[in-house]
Image (cartoon, rainbow, N blue to C red):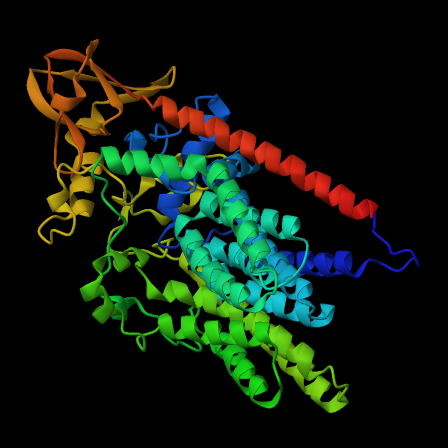
Length: 582
């Protein structure tokens, strides 16, 4: 039913969202027309995650920790420490879609639409007029920080949906408004980011901390603000218990191989490439920063605009070589967990777009027609340029799909066949979802259990190579039959003689191993450097059963998180109804 105002006029918010919906759908035109997939450098990793979650849902065989379907059924821990609820959400979408093409089309549309909507509401809630909010929201949705999921399947692109929500929560910290609403919204923003991408939540907490300090310095009721933030933090802790506890438990009990540690931030800094697509900084991104810089020179800005502009330019510099990251890392090596300074660019862009919206609102409030026309024209040109660049990048990805390589290869990707037709056909609906995951392999070694901590940062140790040798190039692969039985991963193979063998399965502290009916003592289980199991296989038939015994405390905190979400949702619905009634 179409929403109308009391005077019979269409609700402007509904119309705006409808426009964003239509534009987001149109941005998928090239892929819909060509029925191709965009496969970048992260698709193998994340599609294995989501396939594992999808099969768990499909078969009702839930295993929160180890992978029993994806990642070559190697029993490695990924989803439990890497956005667990987001993984199950995508697994459900994959099951609903039934094919990788439909799944990719849907998620590409969702990230485009939700990023536009979250930016639109960030602008509208900060009193930027509707037309300007729509133009900036569409522009934002076309940028590489959003579309990197579309073209490369990088998970941090989903921060483009989360950061505007988080920034909206931050701006509310500077207002003397309904603290209960602000408290719940703050808890929701941080919780959503932690359930999706933990590093994004770290950036968000940094941003919120800055706004909190400014709020304490400027608001009259400082105690009310402090109480609100403390309560929001407590709510968030309860609602994210299923995220932070597995991270603590698995890292405390195992020597987990971290995601790659980058000690040369200069090589990974943001590069300006105005016409090479897709790219971090294009002419569109640069235009937004230049426009904001010029506008603030000629208008008197308010506190919020000054704050987001200063922070926007600061994080922009932090994403480039201009910031002395390498010198800082020499003194504080733990900062290398950020991996890529270019990730600060997303935060900078979200801040600057809000600044542009606020500046334009202040700039046209004087009713100067010429000035208004110029500003609107500039925004339209920037938006159209963003849309145009998106279509150019899409066409380039179509060319890759139709080439012999099919995907945007990197040096670590292993393709098991040279026939491009076979590779493309593996993604068709008639092929099982697992098929492309067996043709394209990538030895991403994040979170595998290392033998000792000295291997971390050891230049002579190559985890990708060790992973490939233990899992992909394992001689037992042709002999082993893998099945899932009663929430257990079962390996069956036949030996011509008794011998010591490395099996393609990882063993963590809480992994339970049964070899030929006998439970092995985990403390004495032999593993190689990367945590792959080594056993004495007997002559004849061998059966290995793998399962993971999670701690009682994990199940307790999982229940706490679920009930916290239920309680939070109930309170939120009640507040919304109360607000409507008043």
